[in-house]
Image (cartoon, rainbow, N blue to C red; front, side, top):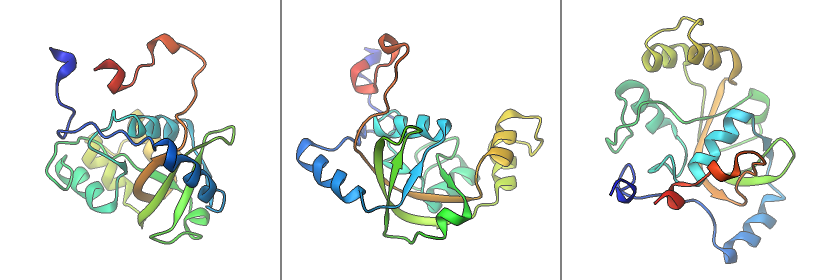
Length: 181
């Protein structure tokens, strides 16, 4: 019975495009600014795309981010304990505007997804650390990562999956939420 439970938020959000949409989005992505994802970002995007982070349909926009940091809830009041954000540097973000799209690639340059940018903002990461982790002390690994390894600008928007990230190890253990159900 456990495998048949509803997804968090009520619906499993799988962000893979249909075959008919896939080729068009791939072509459009050739003209988009491109971002190579870090290992951490690649993990987050995989969980977003396969529905493990349902009900999210992309990286959090500013409204959901603020609500999660302040109240541990998405804007629709769904319980959510930690922000899921896409951090970028000022140079990359300076080339973008809301309504534009970007191509998100893995470390080898393979197009994983596209994202339509809904919000661009510079968060107070020390405030985020204090509220999410209960401390701003860099000896905490989450705080350390947030303050020392993430970039200062966040992008939020919906994702469209072009290709799921490829894994060469532990394939027998890598099942998506839909496969587990």
